[in-house]
Length: 282
Image (cartoon, one colour):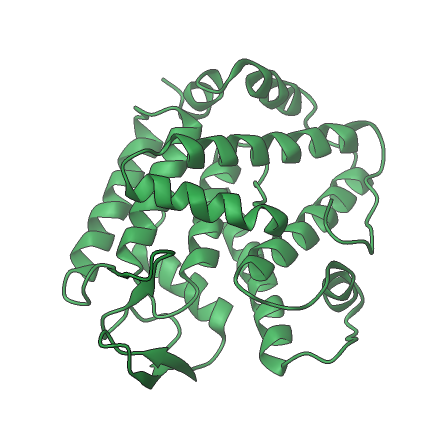
């Protein structure tokens, strides 16, 4: 069965119709497509970085990426990571157009582009002591990483020793799903996200890389990238916690709703120009 066909037929009824309408609407008028991608590009950059703590506003993101100008008093690193993420989006679009399967090297390239250059980051030892950690872009972690949960407990990800083999398994599994799919598309995205985050292969940038990876899958299927809105960050983190407890459905629902937003925007662009906005993301 054609992979894209399987995934589209696996979508909920309303989303399935949006996906079919989007495919029928191709190709868009050139100007409409350009404006659509400008809008998606700003939304994707702003929201994915904002979820991770970047303080540029939506308008400042637009000003930086479309007009090459800066405004406000932000750390230089925040401007750099916004530019780096924008370059990573273009790499994802290029990879989606290629016929070859995605490799681990592509994921390391995305992380390297996102982070741009190495830096020291304030961290905490497993014993709770403050420390500093050197972040090396594009390289799998060499030290254990962990996160403090809402209950104050330490949640440990895959060890550095386990990471290469687990990443190889994840990429192999994804290749198999993209050749012979067995999961509905929202559930595939949820499992891909969950498995990647459980490994947490990099010292920094894991959330942004996995959202880029989800959108590689969607673009390869001829669909549009989803955007997890930063205003939904709490619900997104709760869904990740549910996934850790064995229930992927809330995460799948978030991704399905986000894809629906993008497809409706795409169908709007099929008939008229999509407007950029300097207001915060809708």
